[in-house]
Amino acid sequence: MEGFDIHEILRRLPHRYPFLLVDRILELEPGRSLQAVKNVTMNEPHFQGHFPGFPVMPGVLIVESLAQAAAILAFVSEDKYGENAAVYFAGIDKARFRKPVVPGDRLLLVAQVARRKSGMWQMETVATVDGIEVASALLMATLRERDA
Image (tube, rainbow, N blue to C red; front, top):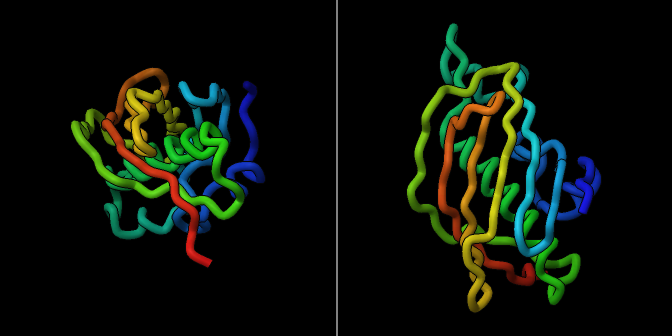
């Protein structure tokens, strides 16, 4: 399945500025995998303090980018939930950070379904810049209807 743009992302994720960390879906195979992009720019608010004179994207925001990409994959893959569904982050294992991410970088976010059981999704995720791995993590999530 071909990817989709920011409007489709906004339909599926509750995040908004400054916390929406996925810009475009490049490839999507429901129930299997997803490739997305996060363009890193100096205009992002966290660079004011992380770190002055040497801007580095916080590792926790790289993981959040991966989690948002994985959430889109889970949401698009589940057919029993409607527009009122939300994907909830349930856990993280094996997080690794290999190289700093700086303004001007284009993060390629890859999520692959490792396991799906009893409403829980386990996804292997990797973030790369120019083909070089910068971070990876095993993420767990679940889908639920949001409270009205």
